[in-house]
Image 1 (cartoon, one colour):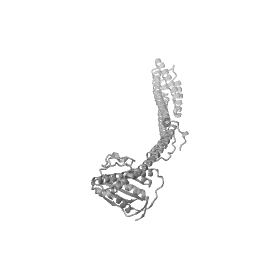
Image 2 (image 1 turned 30 degrees about the vertical axis):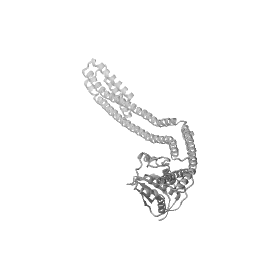
Image 3 (image 1 turned 30 degrees about the horizontal axis):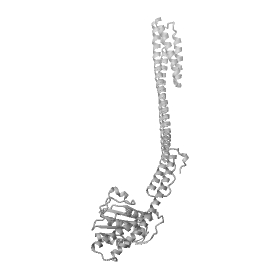
Image 4 (image 1 turned 60 degrees about the vertical axis):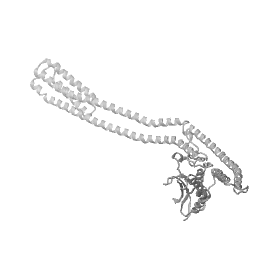
Length: 482
């Protein structure tokens, strides 16, 4: 049993703690995923911005070189001083763009090309000599340097594009790596969450299962000490209340048994005197009887026998409920036992024109003959009570899977579905009761079930066409001979 100190004091607190703990790994995983995704999104945004700026600045350098060559041609070939500011502006614009790009480039090859481009642009500008004019031959002699400058600018553009593509692939690889990490995190959190859920589910369900077991034990009428219940303090207190209830029920059961025994024995003495008096009247020891008097004596005798049977049922039920001794198994011939029980009921059978069909193998069992005979006697008496006049009763016995199975079936009105679960309860009587001068005690079927359960078997209702009511006895026993 899990020590109580590992449980909180309240079942409600246990549920709240369980829900809180289960949310911790999920919440931490969600927060971590959001943080990682925010970092990836920020990196992508910054990369997109930097890539766009670098590409734009590189293309501007290419355009600036073209504009510088055009401005130099206008200044030197046209020999117009009005173009000198334009030449200086284009020179400054190209120098500024080169400096700006130098601060943003990170690729080593592109930075080397940019450095060459800066040096050659400065050299070329110095040879253009703003403030003086070059003749056509001198200016055209600079075409090679302009071509080199153009080539460096295009190379820088290609290298910048290649660097952007490499950074894009690197970023994609980083995104895939992040996806894998998040997937692994999710795969790690799932079993962890399931494990925590299983632990808390066990902690929550365990005391509930213990309580259910205790309730089922009390429902079966088993008054043995209940197992201790662990868990939160309020559940432990409930377990103690269950134990108090068990002790109270046990006390009431003992009082009931003592009361039944006392009443039964107290009733037997006056009933014996009454039956003796009726017997004397029936033997005409007090004088001859006329037919009407004989009829009254017969009714009194039948009622006395019925009352005696009910009193004996009370005594027998009390004895079965209090008897904890193991049944005594002895060799038992099955078929003669069934015939003997049927023979004891020959008078009511003949009176109502009932036939008993016994279908049983001629085998010998090791069983408690007294308890089996008691159960069979009560079932046959019940079948006779509810069978219509001139009907049939079936007693069918079989040996199956190391168990003895016996069915007693009749053609009576049957048992309503809402009463099937209660027919074996003590003192329960169904709605369909045959007319009789003395009402039954409702203990016959309870005695049947108690007798069979004391032998390790059971009694239950069964379906057996075309019979309307069928009671089945099951009992594990040993087959001796065939």
